[in-house]
Length: 290
Ligand SMILES: C[S@@+](CC[C@H](N)C(=O)[O-])C[C@H]1O[C@@H](n2cnc3c(N)ncnc32)[C@H](O)[C@@H]1O
Image (cartoon, rainbow, N blue to C red):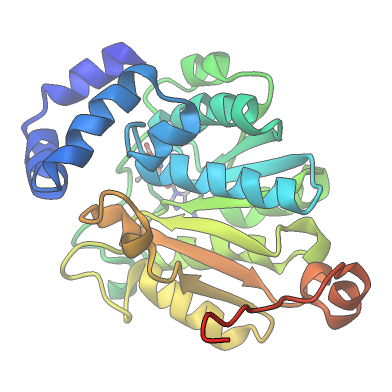
């Protein structure tokens, strides 16, 4: 992992992002983050955005914390669109650390064609940005060999492999990253949210990779697929994490706007009978004027 960090630091775009997103943040927080990076726990490193692919780290920890609060012991985290596998292996690396931090077991599941991007259908797939054959797998054998025991990749069209995963995945779906670029592929990936409600956390953190360009819009790509999903589903909605930037130590990061929750409103844990049966005490507010 440390080799990867040094290689990344050699890329000018990384320095530009650091300059724009990080170095203008309060000096105190930047100094603190150096110490956190050296001596901090996984949770502290995630709080201070010291982990490569901060949104994955943030969402995986949030999923594990949610799971723990509901007494769920094992979750599945998913990446739609694996390509060469940089994102998936990063998920595995984070998952191992989050398990140590929280005690929650994590299955890592990838979905990919195994052949790079399929053909786009029309303008809604942003063909001007992504096209047939982009992002090929590079070395599938090496990638599969590098996966830990708790990880697997479903190769093939998502429409088909998702059905197989529905029959095989037994852990609670806890985090979903969507990085398939096209509108039609995203629409198919979002079928992962059509399973029975007990298969999910009540709110599943989601990451959408292709929503942050200045010209991404509600009429194409992932944003269109999200809008249509919300229109079509009464009890499942995908909504941005509310006020996320305000809750973070470092507030300028672009990724905050790529992170959503899939709300499972028909989940048992959100039903009146369940809440009534499990409430142990009423909330009480004190009044400093009395
Ligand atoms: C941008 S790449 C993923 C990059 C990866 N998440 C990473 O961070 O390294 C997009 C991938 O989505 C996959 N993909 C797109 N549409 C697909 C579909 N309908 N079925 C299967 N895979 C698809 C392509 O094979 C491609 O490798």
